Image (cartoon, each protein chain N blue to C red):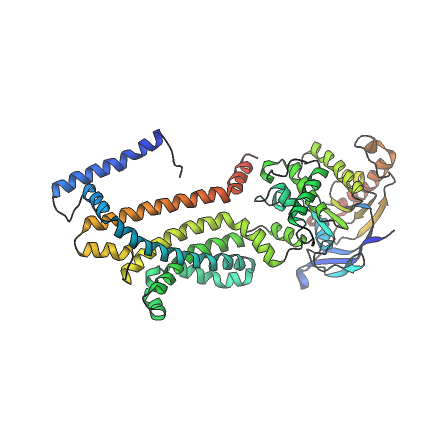
Length: 266
Length: 257
């Protein structure tokens, strides 16, 4: 299997000298082509910092991030990000179609008409066919996040980074969106890296879960979720494999939280 | 500022009509051309309108030129300074200082470099219009959420593309306020600069009329200016509704969520 992403000894500190706070303390893991990997850890362990470093949006203190062998120093070609805060990541002056087409800003050799057609197709893929003319403020939260997902898909990325994309939507929309993301990952053979604080979601979505420690954060262990690509909100969540993985991850995270000094829990 | 129709418009007329009637009554009692009533002013408008329109043409052209110069320079500069936070912080105190300096105060300095012709007036107008434009654009650009920048970077936009496609539209609601203030300023200073550096234009016309005790003629010109101001204001309002609908609509939809 081809390795799409290789994170090696990644550290990140804020501040300098005696005041320096080490958030990430040497993280290493890999993501293979076509894999769906979840990263989960105790609150405040720097999951989003990690994801932003992989996206080339934050600098690293040491270590390396390689995308298909190429070191990442700035946002690389072939990585798309779906941010948690969809209300800020979409542009209210653009309708859904133009927001999605904007994801192709850096893809050369396409006419504006091609981009619009592709944008419509991507909206269709996230279940928003016919919503191209609607503006973000005319859509519900879940629909806005689907537009953001369509925009990420439109950029034809090697790796889709999902930064707690469903943290701000209601519970029912959330399970629908989990299935939508899984369906998209399969249909577009999209390699995905999901960062979430929700253990159930991490296990439900992933082929493999990377469990992080508390700060300074490292990888505690990884679990392969042997459930196949097809998941079901009811059956999968009752499957002993799911329950065992959930138990394992929950236990690790609870231990980290229990052992955490008071200031790290804030 | 809603242009109400029917009942609202009718009740809105009560006060102006009452003022006009009272004014006319006082003018009759005074019985001197130094205190003309609205009727004499109306007669002057009828008699003088070709001259007034011609002179207002000069005034508006210079106001427009100064305004355009200011907008073309200050909007990009404001966006840029908002992005380059360090440079922005360095020039901010200077901007605050210039903002409180009344435009007529710069007239002698401008005259020194640009003489008293059209260029000098346009420079002064541009200076007056620049202040609200740079302040509003800079504040808007500085206040943009960090998220917008992260999205731009992850879409691998160039700096120029980010400023053009994200920073500019996102700052537009505040820039619009700046533009409205700049237009008012440009008109005001265009007339004032004519009174100081007299050659032609409506400011000169008003001054000459008053020097010759043609008070009604001066008031006729003032009536023209206020109508033009009203028309421009309305035009800007219509443009704003057209270009910023997303801003008004999205703030409506956020407030109920």
